Length: 112
Image (cartoon, rainbow, N blue to C red):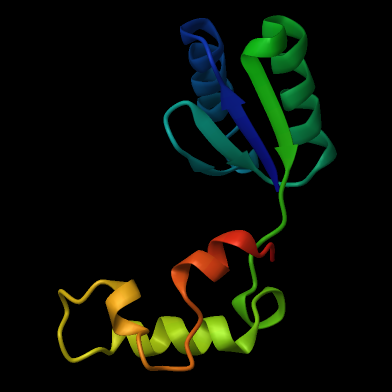
């Protein structure tokens, strides 16, 4: 998919107009950003936005996140255990004390 982020009101308006006019290319809109299908036409729309608004438009190519392929098993296990904890108000750092689950600090320093 293509992620388009706008940084000015004029660029946002142009993005809104493009999304309304080309709904078949839009996966999702987020106000000042939009996800477009990964087609040549979507790339064409993104290029037009960049040409018109320059640095006020950022275009990134994204790939969907697959938690079963992109994430270590220990992180999925920790997330599942934390969501099923007995006390819903327990912060994660308190929850992991005395367990084999990774600390929030160690997860912050490791890249996927």
